[in-house]
Image (cartoon, rainbow, N blue to C red; front, side, top):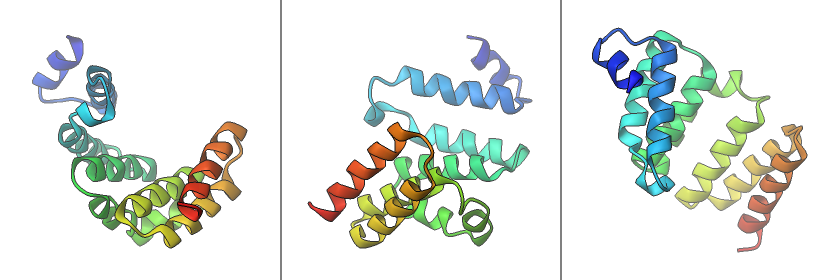
Length: 138
């Protein structure tokens, strides 16, 4: 596979790392079968060479999936990240999901509300509204 060859050269750039992440997702039959530790490591390397807030957000998701929701929440608490992505609905959606999974349903509801207010896509907004309803009416 081209991705594996590029990674073996030990000089992978952002496109090779993104391809490797996508390949790992494609290999998994379900989210539970995904090699989350490897994806978290790849996002760590991607963040090192291309430090963007969205990559940091994606890494937080992968770290949470590889470990615990609290692991991901700790990464989201970075003040630079939280302030930079405050207007980004997916930041709040991720935070809401991790809070829900960690058992902080009241805080999760607040983050779902913020994500809903920022979402511009009707399908995403409906999904977030369903998740909000689940935490408000368990």
